[in-house]
Length: 277
Image (cartoon, rainbow, N blue to C red):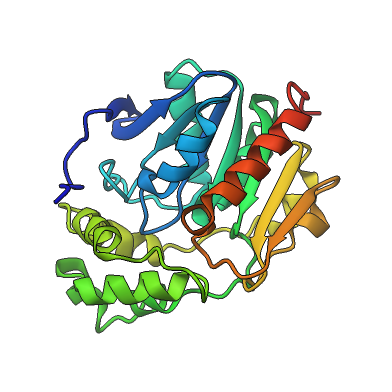
C-alpha cells in the first residue's frame, strides 16, 4: 500500500516565506503550473500530468494547508495570500513566465494570480473554479463551520466521511473513487496539522474580488462540468473560451484527464507566447 503521507522519489521541496512547499516537476517545454483544490493534493493531476509532460514543463505544488506542504504558521488562508505564495514559489524556482491551470480552489487562486501578476502568465485555465459569492459550499466544508463540531474535526476526520465527500464530488458515471483514492485523501488529511489547517481554511472569511474578474487580460480557457453552479468566468473575462463537460463532477481533472489535458494542450498551443496586456 502506498504511504501518501511521506515524500515520494520524485518529491521536491522549496522554502517560500518560511513555508516548505512540496512539489513535483516533470516534462519539457513551456512552463505549466497545475493547482489542486481544497482537501486535495498535487496527485489530483497525476494522470493529466502524464499526458501533458511530453509538451510542457509541468509543475505541481501541494498548496498550503494540504498534502505534504501542510499548515501555514500564520494561519492565513485567504485566497490572495495563496496567490502571493504561488507567485513567490515560481519566483523561487526561477520560472518567470508560465501558464496557470487550477481546479476549484486552485482555479480561484489562479485567477487571483492573473489579476495580481498578469505579466507572468502566458495563459489561464479555470477548471470548475470558485470565486463568485453565490457558489454552493460543499456539505463537508459547511460542517467545519459548526462551532460544536469544529473542535472534534481538528482531532479526527473519519475515513468514511472523506469517502462520502469524494463520492459526492464526482459525476454520476464516474468510477474513480476507490480504496486507493480514499486512502490517499485520508492519509494526507491525517498528517500533523492538516486537519486543523483545513478547518481554519474553511472558516476563513474570503474577500470577494469577483467584481474585478472582468479586468483579467490573460488568455483564458474555462473548463466546466455542466452540473457545477456559480461560475460566470466565460461571461465576465473578455475573450474567454469555454468548454462544458456534460456529466463530469467537481473533480474533472481526475474524472476526465484525457478531456482536460487535450483541452489545455490545444488552448495553450493556440495562444503560445501571447503577451498579457
